[in-house]
Image 1 (cartoon, one colour):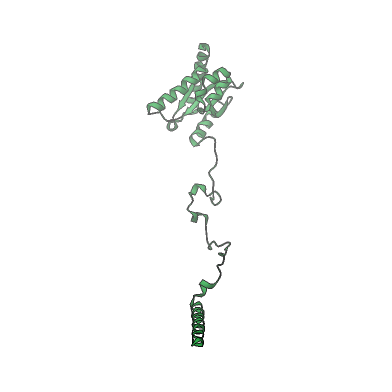
Image 2: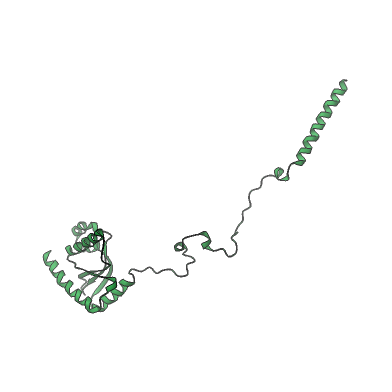
Length: 199
């Protein structure tokens, strides 16, 4: 009887071990295999991959852009006017994109401080004589329609006038010929002399 209990216990343990071994063999191989680090794939871009596949804005794809737009100081209309100014005034010097604050500084620090609110504002061209004395400022612009734009242009005109510099405005769709420019400059010289006398 004593023997039977021990035998039974031994058989139970062996049976239990057999079941455990059987269940371990049934588990999938993937569960038993140790976890592997993900493989690093280099140069996995498909053939024919292009930078535009990234969905970038066309303006940012500098590498693949066949032709980049030239960085120019003045636009086409301003270039046309510049050449006409040179034709009309061969003995004068013309500067492009000059700041009003820079012109004020030529009159001294006090004038520059007085017109400090004009920082960032400029004129398209400044016409100078042979001795580089300023004759006139020239703007190429469409007529202002909004009250704010009109006030801004008038502020620029008055600021230049206070410096003794007359402002001539031409329209892009009505570019003057060399003769008309010569007449406008002659009138500007008279105005400049008057401004200087009143200063």
